[in-house]
Length: 295
Image (cartoon, rainbow, N blue to C red):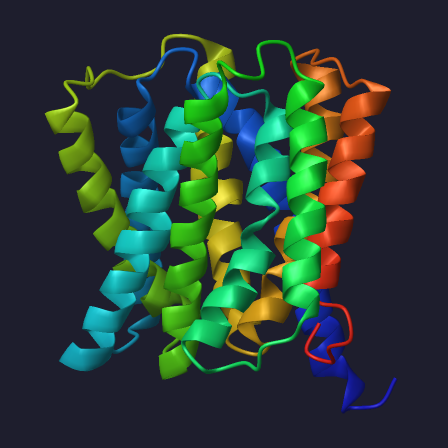
């Protein structure tokens, strides 16, 4: 193996781990929601995750960025951790994991469209075509689920969460911040955790700890694997690839999540749902990645 190929393979390995960890997160959140109110469950997760990053930052004696960069990182966390995960946790109270990850999988398309609006990527007609295909697939997938109409508010919350997260990542990419991934995560997750704590307080969520081993296991996974490891790797990849290419990871989340949901939470996956999911993913691929070199 040549020296020049090693960095690319390292980034690809990090990308694949993001896919596995990110695809598992929705299942773990469903377990967390069994006992913990959604905003409080999200806040608890990210308070501990932020603490872990601050401990690593202190141990490695990493310097903090200047005030401007710190503010941008905090804004990124406010959007991608705070608002986005508040909507995600709330949406997963009702929406099945397999369907939720299909909605979240539209994030690369949002990322590309927002990157065009921010003028950091060029517009392509494939985006409109892909968006239309994805909407058709989404309608099929929703109709394949029992109570599809009643799920609409939760589905809109999930879509809004994906849109907000995409905006946060594009803002991060615009400024091309070069701080260490540990520093970026310590600041961004802290910002998001503060928002989630405030939201849980306003919503009247009970600030309690889990009482069953299953929920403790889910929360522990969400803190360590689903937050500390995954977010470190995501920022690592985002710092080296384009925003659109990095968001490609989300395209594979439904595969991991659907397999785990059918195994662990016994969700039923029908052929019609699989057809709709396939059309959504195809539409996102056409709209965000077809004909590009960045992915």
